[in-house]
Amino acid sequence: HQSILAEIDRAIVGSITTTSGRRAPLLRSPDAIDIYPANDAVVAGGWALLSVPGSVELYRITQCASASRAEYLLSGQTTRVHLSGELPAGRLPSAFEHAVRALAVHVQSEELELARMPLDAPVYGETIALDRRVDGLRPGQPLALRGKPQRIAIARGAGDLHWRSDDGLARSLAEGDELVLVEPPVRLVGNTPHYLDPHALVSAIGQSGVRLRLRLRDRDGLTGVVTARGKDILLARPRDDDPELAEVVLLAEGDDAVVQTRERTVLTLAASTRHCYHRRLARCNANVAPATHGETVEALLGSGDGRVPNAQFELAQAPLTYVSAATASGRASTLTLRVNDVAWQEVPTLHGAAPAARVFETLQDDDGKTRLLFGDGVEGARLPSGAANLRVRYRKGLGVAGNVAADTITTLLSRPLGVTAAHNPQAATGGEDAETLERARENAPLTVLTLDRAVSIDDYAHFARAFAGIDKAHALWVPHGPARGVFLTIAGIDGAPVPETGDTFTHLREALATYGDPLVPLRLA
Image: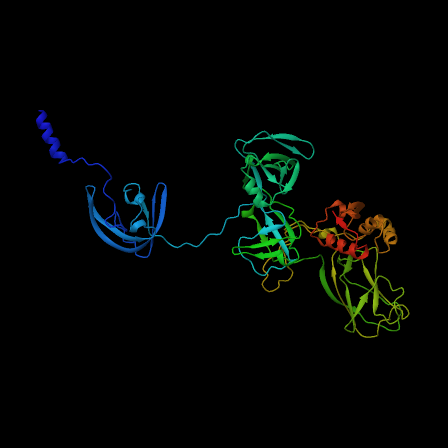
């Protein structure tokens, strides 16, 4: 019985020879390798990447052909490739030559366009990196930013974190909680805060040795502060119900405001953004134009009569629109007058005007009607006689009704070529109703107190209060190096904030530089 079994085993197995040492090499020649199964897509001139655990090498395919091979009790068609590259002593490294089962050969490579470095950092601060190169941007240009807010999530394993609101409410934060980032975070070195730009924030996340202070808003709309380590937080995507944020920013002045790199355009702003945006959902629009309240009216005002001193004419449409300007009053009229196709100039008063001066004065009544008053030949010139020789162009519309919310101006009365739609990315500001009698009595002394100049600290406050679009103002002397400067706090109509990018803020600063001491440092807030 045992002999029968032994014969059967020999018949099944065949002759067995015991060997020692390395197995037979994979290669038929020192610079060639056989790929099984055969692959007709492999061609000469392509690339082959050889890899085994711990070693990777790239080779160029110099020759490629089909070949039959019988090895390891198997036979079949292979693709034989000859390689050039890192070949010590004219042959492949031993790590590849003897790794029959572990060797992987990657072929059929294709040329791919080099991808740009991804940007995952939030958008905030004074620098914005665009996703591509954009030509045509210029220093000082306005831009509209829109997007969803950046959210901060509490990471797994976060320590004992406490969020404290501005009104003193405190609560603990747990893993998975998400809050909205309200302002740029800071890194705490000891107790000293240091500003973190968006890329530094990304680098700090995950670091246990980095302490951050973040100003966050919870789901109830309350704003507060939390101090956390970098490993305690993560950047999170906005939610679908998060409101869209928008603001208008200005590019800085100077040649470095717009920098072109190989991959993208980097912008430097005149001031930091008011919001922190999620980068992938943020948009930057450069097709921005300023718009002010008022519908344009062109009309025939009447006929001049040189025999009539101090002639008066009334505008048919009311109220007359005034726009913000860097004047002592903070406003400028939109009214222009041409007499016999010659422009006449509006002046605050005819008193003291030259007899031949082509000037006029405007008067407002309690109903908002505007009348034009002309000279008598002694103070200001009389109107020349003529038929229908007075023509006016002005705008009508005025007041807080023009302070509309964001995205409410969507209708264009006329469409210039190439413009298909329009909207206002942020709320309109600066609109002010005509003064009531009570308010006029309050503000009348302000212009007398300043006389169109700002010298004392009270002058700065009075000048700002009398400025169009400003309701409240408070001025203080503050230290500024070896000297001192003026810190001026302002509020708009009904206490509304005055945005730094708005005309009212900009024109007030310019007016104070003109009518105040230009050498005195001034800060508006």
